[in-house]
Image (cartoon, rainbow, N blue to C red):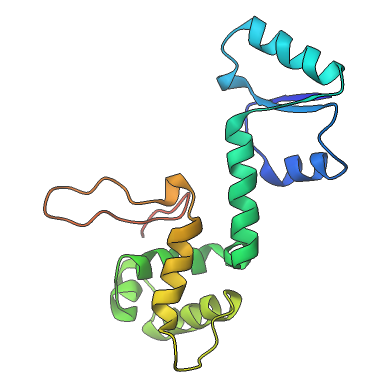
Length: 163
């Protein structure tokens, strides 16, 4: 079976591959550039092989890494708060940018620490550890964006739009 999709659905792809990759393919329509490429993938899968778009493999690896790190457990709001933390912003600055109360930001930061397994032990700066975890496994779209001269580049999770 070959899935030819317009969208990358990593969760669906993982379920598809749960029993093994033999005889399976997952290709993105906009990345199949010629019929020979598609025919080759179909023949490979028909012979019991697999045909996976490299972008799909990258996304699956990214998701596995995020799951292991705890980032996959974060809510969208917690991801946004963590992205703002990665920019070096204080809780007060995050509250202003995301139109939240400072107390609300504190609760989100606490939830980030808990979900990433960062206990308040006094040995580690949890804020720095959370940001390092985010930067280690952030997808390319979440990585630093091109900053203007004199301004630091921003770090954002996929789909992030400051309020």
